[in-house]
Length: 143
Image (cartoon, rainbow, N blue to C red; front, top):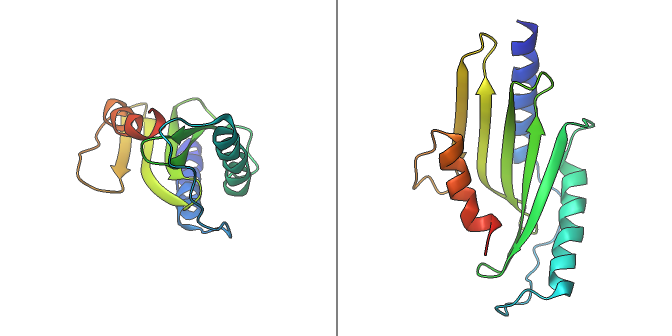
């Protein structure tokens, strides 16, 4: 029961954080087909700031950023590992627009049964598994 309460609390915190806005201005990045080192560094720097503003004071959070040349956007995938290693939660954002693109929680419930939840912002694809989630975010975290 205590694990369930912790998991519920963490999920509620993630949902709250995903709705929070920060004071970042929307910015456009160079539209050339090749991401320069300068643009990649700008993305990495802004992703670190974004992550530091979003994360709770928990050391189980991590992130990965990627500048997508085709979309001319900087994305961040924030990952949280549950305290008891029963699963993970991931959220994909556009760093400069503070826009959430995907959200997923994958693991086991307090009875040890698989418990997966995910959604995509555009709602055009079903999300029922880690495979669905990873397939969707691949379009943003690669290219």
